Length: 163
Figure: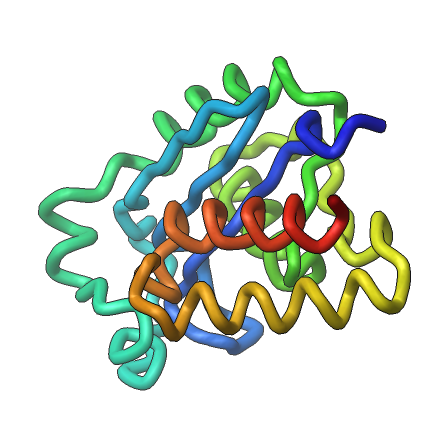
C-alpha cells in the first residue's frame, strides 16, 4: 500500500462516556478533506463541559451551525464510497463507536471499517508518529481536538514517520 493512499478519520464528541455522540467528523479520502459539524439528535443528551473546553465547540453552536445527522450520513456515505472499505484512525475504538452512533441514529450501518493507523507502522514508526504528532500539536500549526486539523496532523505525522 502506498502511504499516500490511506484514508483517515477523526471524530470529536460530546465527551468520553458511553452516552457520548459525535459532534464533528472529518475525513481524508483520496487526499481530499471533508468536515461536518453535526447537529445533535433529540435523544443525544450527554454533554461534558471538559470535552467542550478541549474542542471549543458549544452545544449551542452545534444546534445553530450543525448539519442534521441524516445529511451527514448521506454525504459521508458518498465520500466513503471512494474509500477502500477501510479508514484509519489514531483512536479507532472511539471513532468506530461514534461513527456507529451517527449511522445508527439514521437506521443505517457505516459503509466502512475503522482500523488503527498504528497497525500500519513498526514499533519505531509508532514512537516517531507520537513524537511528530505531539510536536505538530504544540507548535501551533494545527488546532488539536478539532476534527479537520486532527486529520491533517495524523496524516502528516504518518507520512513523516513512515517515510
